[in-house]
Amino acid sequence: MAPILQIKNLSHLYSAGTPFEHKALDQVSFSVERGEFIGIIGHTGSGKSTLMQHMNGLLKPTSGSVELDGVDIWKDKKTTRQARFRVGLVFQYPEYQLFEETVYKDIAFGPKNMGLKAEEIDRRVREAAGFVGLTEEQLKVSPFDLSGGQKRRVAIAGVIAMEPEVLILDEPTAGLDPVGREGILENIQAYRKAKNATIMMVSHSMSDVARLTERLLVMNNSRLAMDGTPDEVFRRAEELVHMGLDIPDVTRVFLRLKKMGLPVEPVYSIQQAVDALKKLKGGNVHA
Ligand code: ADP
Ligand code: MG
Image (cartoon, rainbow, N blue to C red):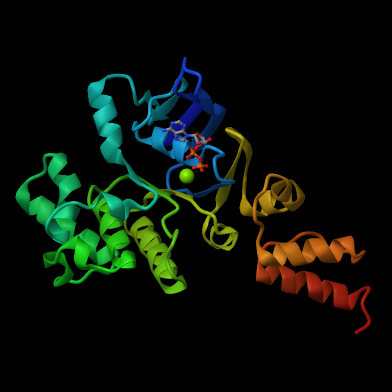
């Protein structure tokens, strides 16, 4: 099947033509297949957020293109508007953009903008609230009366309520406690499963992306430095460290063991570590 998104030689300059000109994206190209769960990693300032904001037409390429189902999302006004609905973007710290008097109204804002009928809006608000675990009671309160984690859920529900085919989340778990983080990650997986949605998630947590995603894009200095399965990417752990990136704890331990002379290859999951250690025990180590 044809890819849902195609990014072709995408470059973006901020403040073009001024002394503050900055190339935030440099010739980035990749395709996204329908239904994939992709993780985007890279150090701060590498261009992750800039890249994500191009996926739904929030930012316009300086050069290159973003195609949705083979059509440039900047082809005409109608196409750009469609892209905004079909590709949903949850910003970093989205709770700062809540502004309605009730949680219900905040979640309803997107679907309303789409021009849907009242009944359909109502159905979507309730379904989206369900995905993120908000109760009927919470729909009636002011978003400002909720905890940080709950506000984040409201903001995510607002995007989910538009039922985007591609859901993009820019560091959705940043600043939350472990329980809040796990909850949000489960919400995302629930949405993906229910709607066969495509997910792109920017994350600082290497263990989260290693565990959840099928493919990783690594941004470095405005460029796409790697594009592969978590296995392929974490095998290049030394390069990742060089780029100022964190690697999974277990990968770090194994790199250390390798440096100490043990015949092990880098691993990135606990299961792989167990397998590698078993092999080692059967072979070179007499414990
Ligand atoms: P990341 O999300 O990986 O941290 P960003 O895409 O936010 O990276 O930023 C990439 C680069 O572009 C950084 O150097 C940042 O300072 C710069 N940048 C981001 N937004 C703007 C903006 N609105 N105007 C000018 N420069 C920006
Ligand atoms: Mg960012």
